[in-house]
Image: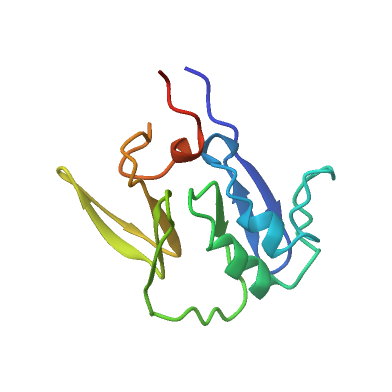
Length: 137
């Protein structure tokens, strides 16, 4: 089995970790900080394109956790509030972290997590973008 691709982009204040195999192409990062996340540039993550706080806030919105943060080296003032959004025809998105109990497993998720509601995800209970793909006939 091949090792998954994992890339890291670091500044003095923060490190962004990217796992492309997890990406569901929601575009939240591209729309949120286009000077940091730009598919036309190489590397596509410009860690110096914005301040660390804005980068952390945008990465925490990533529903698939293809983008994550490690090594925050500034005072992080994340709130403890939880926000739940239902996307019509799409996932349930929880922002603010959660404890997830699934089968015999419990895990803690910080930031944003996206749950499948269509039942077609290959990563169930998490959304993998399958709701946006045409159904097989």
